[in-house]
Every structure is written in structure tokens, then in C-alpha cells.
Length: 266
Image 1 (cartoon, one colour):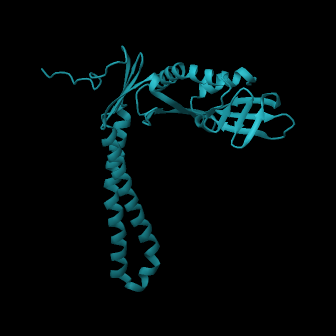
Image 2: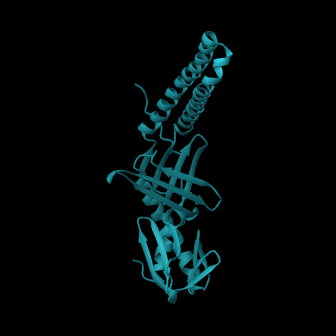
Image 3: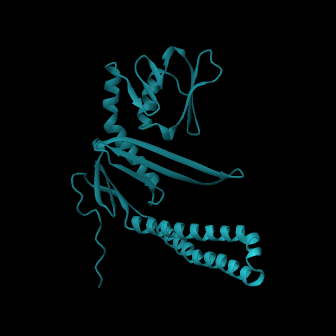
């Protein structure tokens, strides 16, 4: 009887009980391999076709006619080279991510790939960015993509996206854990009169900051969050004082809560 494959997370320590595992989705794994194989098979076909056109033209009409076909030959050759490079990249990506998986724990999460196992406690996280995009075609919803980028205090950067099973559940938990760990630091800093930065924006008890621009809280006309876009308007201004997207703002939920302490968000 064949023994079960051991979990890649058996050596995880210090993160508390495991709550869920998120392996690489089978569809993602085999899509890379399948597309890579098809592209590699297409490359010699396209390259051979370009050579055949050149040879056939020379045999039939001689070098003088070759100039008329050179555009077609070059295009076919370029497509063949592109298919070769794409196929190699897809197979490499499939190989690189083949054993990747993530697991959620009470006090953090673990991530494993070909470079080995990494453990991240909530208090080791410096920032989390999230990019959640809903896609529509002709007004019909076609799906949602999720990308969660985690930067740790020792400058590691991990990306959790739709190649992992139930990544939205995992990403939401990571956001929640990081927010709970980081929020007291940011709140205390603002209370102490310090300015705290969130990517393109910063705030303190006096107002908002965007690059070299400053906007006092009393001068804010409206703050609107709509479909992942945050727009800020100034009293007396025709245009937005600043417009940023949620994916640009690290630790967005902390920023959102602190912003709501000083002004109304529509």
C-alpha cells in the first residue's frame, strides 16, 4: 500500500493550529504545461514553414522573387521564435510553481515553493497590498482576479493569487491578521502627532498629503470610494485633489479606518 504524500507544512512551528491549506490549483498547473507544450510544438512548424516558403520561392522563381516574399517569411519566422520563447517560459513557470502551496494558521501563514518553506507571523508583516478586479464582457460578469502582495519586515515579498485554491479566503485572512497586528502602531503614531504613509498618500492629525500637496481636513469637500478608486475633492476645486486606486495603497483597511476618523467617506 502506497503511503500518502507528506504535507509540506509538517515542519511549521510557532503559528498555532492550522486552519486551512491552499494548494496550487490543478487547472493552473496543467494549463502552463499544456500551453507550453503546444507553443513548443508550434515553433518548429512555423519556422519550417518560413524556410519552406523561402526555398520554394527560390526554386520556382529565383532570388528576384524572394524580395516579394521576404515580409511573409520574416513574419512566420518571428511567430516561430515567439512561440519557442513563450513555450519555454510557460514550461519554466509550470515547473517553478509546481509544488507551491500556502497554509493558513491562527497566528500567521506559511508558503512553500521550490525555494523552500517560509513562515510569516502576523507581526512580521510590514504591508499588504490587494488587487481585486471584477471582469465584464459586454456587460456580463466573467470572473474576478485576486492578487495579494505581502511584504515582511525583513524585506521578503510573497504573492498570493488565483493559482492557489480559495485564494480569496486566504487573502482576506492575511489582510485581517496583518491589520490587527499593525493597527495599534499606526493609531498610536497618529495620536502622537506623527505622519503615517500609505503609498501615494499620507495623513496626520492636520490633514492629508499627496506628494508635495497638503490638504487640511477642514478643506475636504468629499471623499468617495467607488469600484476600487478613491477620489478626494477640495472645497472650491473643480477637479479631484487626488485620485488613487486601492491596489496602490498598502494596508488599505488601516488607512480607510484612520481616514474615517477625520472625514466622511462616501
